[in-house]
Length: 292
Image 1 (spheres, helix red, strand yellow):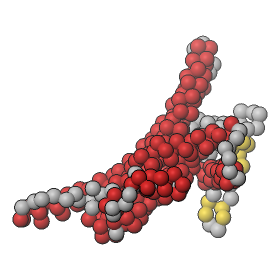
Image 2: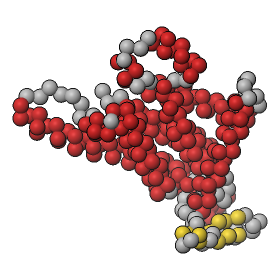
Image 3: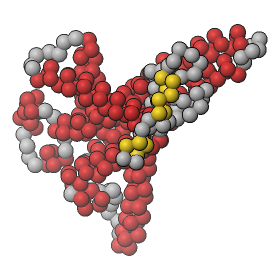
Image 4: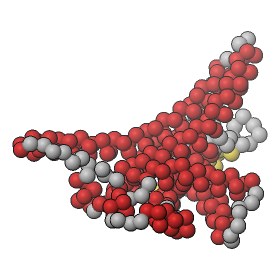
């Protein structure tokens, strides 16, 4: 990578740039491991994983000790986790349909949930993992000389594929493998031949839609994170473009102010896009286990 590359935040690289106190950063080449070239975004994803593990391992240890979690640091992460649980997963997934059809006493069931947990909590580990992993990947882009792995479409593509696999597994577990794929077509009362013509057509359309919905997960996250870094790079590029001219004195403060504003917006988008991905993943799981 050229040391003067304005878009270093956006692109993956086989070198890791470190500040040197001069115009040219220190470039640390990344090794190959068993023939696999390690890249900057691979390293940053490991950092995001380590942050997620260390923070929530510490939070879990404190919760297991009983009593209220104390300290602003731990309360902040607990607040985010409880928000995803109480405002995304539980209300979106609700109670699996067979629990409504088996004649259970729902009053007793609600009382039991207070002690044993909500049925939708079974899906919490996956949704929490998506939310916090994506959040840390997004936030790493706000650190100078690092970058956002979620600004790389291959990373968001894998996240979308994993979510697709989770949806299929959850739906198949709830309604059976054949039942899951059959549920793509809603029940319809169609006369004679029309049933044999329309049902396969609708099934193919719904199958295509299933792939498209998860493809949107990939594109939405990638595009939003990449766009923010691109705009910042463009604002900074104005400074270099006007260097040596009289416009530099007017362009520089305006570009810096614009970068600060976009940076604050990116901070908001980092949380927002992690939430959107987690919400859509939860919605798709809910649609799979509630086919009707």
